Length: 469
Image (cartoon, rainbow, N blue to C red; front, side, top):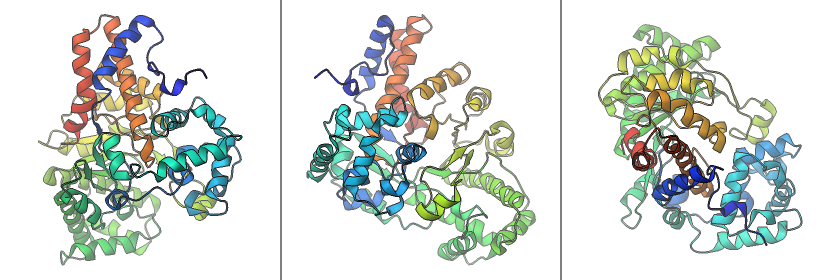
């Protein structure tokens, strides 16, 4: 059998032989550095309990909306993939459906991650992922999953994950994080991240109940908007005390708005009563983005923002399968205008770190790099979601570097629920960075010695610096 492209040593490296040789050396310098993953969606409870993974479908297909959305676009029903907890078909039948359609992922980022997972994690050449071999590959992966060394804690070590941040509800008791932090036999850091979206968006079906629960849980003895604001600050502090280094905000837009207390209180009252218009809901969200920045200046949490996505756009899919099932669609954003109130007051505040992410590529060079090239608080968020793909990562590096250099980067962000794809994603980023730097060396724009220093900084020091690790 010919060798697989999945483990080719020069995958993603430049085609030109001379530049490729430089890139090989640069990648070798960072290939085995530990993984720093300061933003993602792996469940801390799974790691604390050291849960066994149930089956190949539950591990690799059903929870991965990158995978399921493309299959759905090719007329595969989501319940045929056991999405959203559906058990209409067996896990093996869902796997067979995936294998029969695996060719659809050729050329996609998902295809690249899957190929790397199959070869590196399970020892399976992805050319074996076919309809004819579905039963055999299912059994082989299941055997690997059932092995004692294929539990989350062991994989954290074998994947060389030093830091893994989760995404957590403001009212989470963080017991799993506390258990892991107190376990002297467990070396990696699993950090909570404060994600208050559901407590800010008026258009959420249960906003009022959540906001009231937040106020009651904080126990500040205040009601209304004042109690809500105090409760938000209290819960942020609870997260800080349990190891959190950042808050994350999936805002509708990058807008920020500084309202006086009475204006904000009036909007909050409308939100609680369910009478706010969409324009008023967006104004309150923009105000709360400003307030989250103000709180960050006080408590030190890094503020990350992920705007520009119409979430859960297909009502029928949402009703049956729930959120995060592949029907989120990007739209264009205006960062420079939207962030101006926030940066006017906090852009130069000592210790404040703000990391904007985008899936609107046009803003990388036009807005985000210039902002990061002036404000000490702004670090450039890595390509995210639809952009965390090899070619998009290369475009990103080219777009931002000429304006902001290398020092203003957040480091790579895998932003994933697909635990076994984390090593592949980080290695892909390291290869793209090596390729970009190798070109600069070959063009005599930087020295090779300096390129070696830069790639270590990008991979290791940048996320530690941006996320205060």
